[in-house]
Length: 446
Image 1 (cartoon, helix red, strand yellow):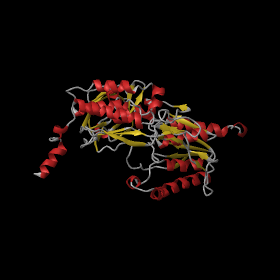
Image 2: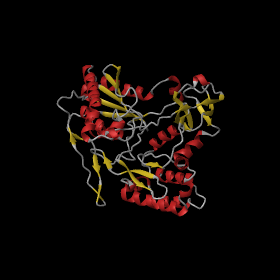
Image 3: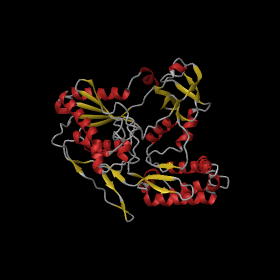
Image 4: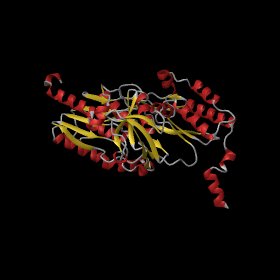
């Protein structure tokens, strides 16, 4: 009997008796608003930057709650309310099991008004599916623009670029075991097919560090290309439960890897280092700081932080760092490839180089621009939903707040259908042209 009761609670049969009612949902919303005012680090910044009106958002959310509002409805109301804050680190979790996620076996790229199949197509050729660069007309009978609009209202993102990146990633997640796709191929022919989805989708954030992280290549003479998929610690499970001393031990192998890469670059007499940070969701700033030490010749402050004490924000401050005597160091030109997937630590690292490096440039698309020590802020009394918010303000070493701003590329690049079809990488191609042009310039003009 006891096992049966546990089963009924977990599956929701008995949970219906304790579901919050209309007034309890509104009380939860009021509790969340109070927590935002008390704890969220970017309320004033968002009000000034994008005209965020917390009272108006709260009133609109309250008006949507009535006697017929279900728990699922309330979950959607909270998700859209929190998403409107434009805090990419925000989180919303409800108690109970989550549906198993699957993956539609194609990546999506937005190009103007069109949605294109991206470079990643997992087994589509075998299933008679589309090829990279093909234009998507419908996904399961719905136009992609309508799907995008609906999903984007519940995406937690700090910048427009980050919102687009995360929405496109979410559009390929599904619970269905197949997807019906309509598309236009490279010959202009309209086609359709039912394609099996992939089991077990791993979210882009929070998973294991991808293979190929810190991979180094030399695509041109005197040019190095370092791919950094993530600044995450190599063992995330151990990292979360580690003390400060233990965390240093966990990072030791990655720090040594970074040092070896810079040593290799020095031996090749490289003049331009291209850092490929695209899709880098962040990790730990301890690794960002370590790489910055290798690239910044003088002592530096990596970022400046403010925290709330006794209801007031402290003056921005940061710790000084310097290149270790044992480090080889790289003092040449640095070019970073960026896009809307760049976030958190990766954005902090970019701002440090942008503020401090004498010969630094960025190529690609604007970053996700999110940073600020996210923490669980409140667990709502009735629904038991937990909301995570940023709790610190992070500024560049010589510039303003990073959150909601990120990095705007010095050299913007827009991908086309032809780029996807041909397998070209226009970001890297432009970076190589910039490197070659700079190397050909007379020394006195560099």
